[in-house]
Length: 520
Image (cartoon, rainbow, N blue to C red; front, side, top):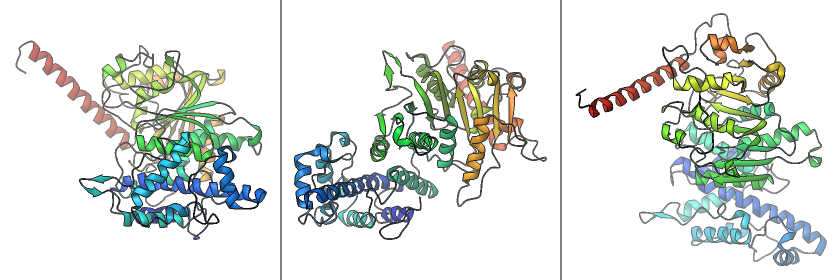
């Protein structure tokens, strides 16, 4: 992402300069709600300029090119109703030269662009740059002018930057805000190396349907397209693109995902809404199924109740699995993902580390362990990857990637590949990262189902059953001779679940006693 142009600054520095130009105007995580639509509009303007210049070469002048584009919008991808007084000037200059009532002017221009381009409606015109709270502008004209000027320092045309500028800008800003402790609820930055591993292992093929039920800005979907194109080895013009589908709960993030699809020129359909309670992708009254599913749902969501599972009409939560307990919906998401796979579908989902082991070894039954056992017994788990610590910005916990396969090849049936990649990382500031060589090593191990000392083991179901359906790679693969104990993070997670279940049981018992008229 160290692409340079214009001012000579890296894309990261350019984006951060833009963020700093309005620093203090809003809470940090809200900066992107202003920055990214403007970056997207700048990209549209610069690409429109490139297209006008191409037409001008054929007809003799940019003035004629503007006239032709206005008369026939099909000559350009997106028609922008922004015409500078001097047609030789960049289209973006219409916005850059606003000097009074700037917020109103920017909002008006963006809404005009949306009116001319139905695909952009509800996406580019979502933000009101003139909005007020308690009579005060959320982003005053001085700061907005500074932001526009900061964005103006870099050209974003077809030959200037890679297509992924919206996705990378979103990821970068989320990461920077997370570093500063300003992360808002519901927004989680997935390290790009984790997404790369997931997409390479799933090996998406041309024309496949790919789905992310918690898609955020669409980064995991984009990585699947990139992995498919990389595997085409220069033949990507000759292969069918992936068909990408996603659902996102947060309206602003939904808009970013749509921008990401548009700017990549990818075949994407992003729906808005709560996937868990109301999945939008359906077919003939049933849940639509896909060739591949990728996801990083928010870990340990505790606001879904047993009724949410019992009232489901889409057969997502089968008998024997179902409600995994109130304290964590991790395995509820896995059930939704499993139900979204076709007969030969495969999935990769990022989960909290504790999802692999919570409840194992406890006396009595545990709802989460029961769901995990259902997935093992039905031979749906192909592999589990244990990640290094301190990769994710919202936690120091390692996290795991669970790989599902509804059509496991015969040689892999009755077994699970466990990969403990806890030592495959390099120190970073403030977070660790997996280098490219490590990414490829992990992906090759998972794809080839290769055993390697202190990295990976193939474990049969009998051994998993013996260990009470604990599927955490750290339980079976020790990365050093001295490491004989389970990670403390896993133990703490299990204790938290046990305490939560005890509180839940106590509350239920007190309610029963009250109904019987017995003082507890």
